[in-house]
Every structure is written in structure tokens, then in C-alpha cells.
Length: 211
Length: 226
Image (cartoon, rainbow over all chains, first blue to last red; front, side, top):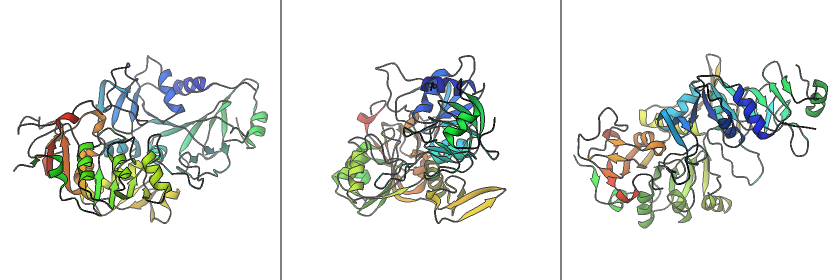
């Protein structure tokens, strides 16, 4: 079965981000979206630790360890960017000012519940960071993830078995095999890899899908 | 009025065993390393620490945890690639963890500083981190009741300050500094430079001096040096 690469997934998400959007990209796979934002659109990236208008990584030797992103890597600030404290930064999320956030996930339910912060394994140290605030705060929450686990189980599910990050907060799921809209009407296929029809996707996910 | 101190040791001298201490910083950016070093040197322990993380590498909060001085930590993101001192203490049962979503941590600290009795926040509703907490539906949306987080002391790092405690910060080292400054009984700021009154532009002062009790200049910790 052919599949979209992680780079192709990032490019696909980037295509759906409009001119003028304020966007937060989560740690990991979503970070790649920044590399594909169309040059002809002004899109401002927000980082939870207090900056808007985040630019690319600095050239080697130019790192400033007081200018970092949520993943604690050195970044730069674009002309017109700004710094602010943590309460303001999370007001931007919780207050519904951020247009789109893109997050990774362990599981997403067809109605848009998200599980992405904790596997619940005994002995694992839990860490939540800004995931819960982002998931429910942004106007739209997109998820990027592989559709199937290594064991072939669907990560798009009827109900999440991992601990929840937020309820009914995800609107779109970008995977390596298909793009879905999720919400109160269940999961709808927006786009799929060539040769993968609704029947095949329903079989892979064991879900009732629409298109 | 002169809030400037001659040394980090003098600035933290009255922090006692069992104190609750907010530490500024997101990872190492904004971490008041020299104030923490002074705290380690004066041998206090049994501390309750509030920070976004649980220490990175070998400096600042990581060093405080390594020295066994922290009884409990309230934070949002303890587990990181370089949080080995916390991980070891946690697995050995030597440190208590209270996990708070990052925005709730900020909002609860801000609420304490602003004198609010509690807040209703949508973050965490329906999750494990809101288990057993009071909830309320307001205008069709669900919220969780969360209480303010205050502390005996806040140790923060800013860029420049004056003897009245007015502060400006540097880039993303600002993070929790301004709200922690409001939420502690005594806030101690380490700055790279103490400048004369009037030389900080009043239009760009981020933390007005009323929130700051002590300022100490640590010139070698200035600027981009981590």
C-alpha cells in the first residue's frame, strides 16, 4: 500500500492554512508544517513560551538560548514579531484568538475527542504541557498522525482508550493514508491516497465512514 | 527605597526549610540559576517548587532537585530528554509531582497575583487532570473550578532592573516571570544590570516595581549566555 510521507503530510496541512492565520504548531511532526507554508501568505506562528511571528532556526553559531520554541530549540523572530508572558500566551489560546493549532495524537475519535498526552502506562511520568489548552482553545484543531499503529490498529477510533486531552475539539485529521473531517456527524473522508476507497478505509479503521 | 541586594546569597538568605518557591523559566530560558545556586549553598530543603518543567540538564532547578532539596513540584511538563535528575528522584519516590496543564498553571498563578478566589477554566474539562474537581456549565461551555497558586517566594530572571524593582525582560526568557512576581509574598529578581531610576522607558516596563521586593545584579549571567 502506498502512503504519503511525513513531508507530504506536512505540505498537505500547510495548503489548508489561509493568509492571515495565527497558527500554533505542536512539537514533533506538526513542526514540519512550517517548512511548507506558502511564501505568498503572511501566516504568524505562535509559540506557547511567549512569541508571535516565530521564524526559522538560526544559522549555526547565531543561536540565542533566550529565544527558543516550545520544544526548547533556538528559533528566530520575524520583523513584526512580539514577545509576551505566559498568561498572555495562554489567553491567546484559551481565549480563541489562535486560528489553527496542529497537534500530534495517540488517538482521535470520530466525534473529535483527542488523546495525545499520556499513554497511561504504569511507571510512565505524565507530562501535559500546553496540549490541553491548545486542543480546546484554538478555533480549529488539526491532528497529524499515521492512521495505523505499527500493529495495524486504527488510531482514528469510535472512542479513545488512552486518557483524553480534550473533548470534541478536533475538526480535521491528516494521516498518511487519508484526510478526514471529524465531529458530531462522525468521520468523513475528504481525500485519500490513490486506490484507497471508502470500503478499504472502513475495513482498515473498522469505522463507519462517510465521504 | 532601595531594593537592590549586594549578592544572590543575601537575596535568598531568609528562605527557610519547607518554603514554597516559584522559579521562573521555561526550560533553561529565564531560569534564575545564580539565585538557585545561592539557595543550594545555604542548605535549605523540603521545598515546594512551582515551575513549568522539572529541571533541564545540570543547572538551576535540575541542580536543586539533584541536591535533594525539593519535596514536591507543581509543573506542567516534567518529562523531557534532559530531566534525568527529576526522573531519578520520581522513580525513587523521593519527590511528589502535581501535574497542571500549562495554561492553568499560568492562570492560577495570575489569579493569585490578582487577588482572585478561584477561576473557572475550560482546559482539562473531561480529563484525568480534572477528576474530582467541581465543574460548571456557563453559556453552553463546560469549565473546571481551579484555585490560585501562591508562594512564599518567587525567584525570577529579568534583563534589566532599577532599585525600585521595575523590570524589563529579554526575549522568551520572560515567560512566567511577570506573573510569578505578582503571586509570591517576596519576589527576588536577578538581572544582568541595575540601571539608574528613570533610565527604563516607563512605556516598556513589563513588571512595575510594586511586585518586586529584591533585585540583585548578576552581570556574568547577562544576555544570550545560557
